[in-house]
Length: 142
Image (tube, rainbow, N blue to C red; front, side, top):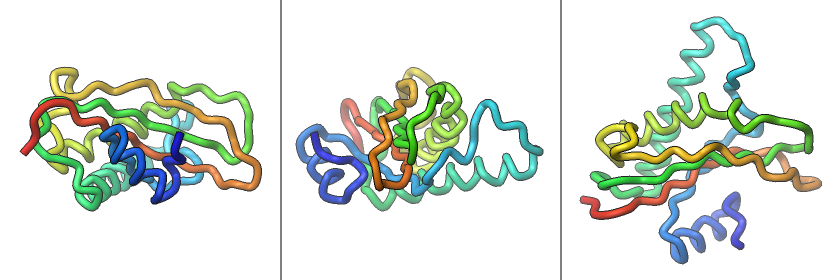
């Protein structure tokens, strides 16, 4: 399978599977369900993720007005250790809101968007951590 963390891999997956891959450019999760932070910095991070997802969707030319999309957040940490996938859900939520802002779908409700549980991939020696989003449009788009 192609490496979705490289430009060549993203292009290949787009061509073969119709997947759009957005590299969120984080080496570790900026939010977690376990992190307790003040509302102001948390709000800033959520806004940053949302804006980043919107901008990357526009740059990748993700179709707008899709009938439905399936979205999944992926994380490959720098080192292997026990981690819960559900701790990544706040990042997924903010990114999905950014896809709605980009008019990929009208809303992030189940009628328009299926959010898969985040996936944590094994660390790869010598590689930095990375977080990316996969988007699979289904049906007609504009």
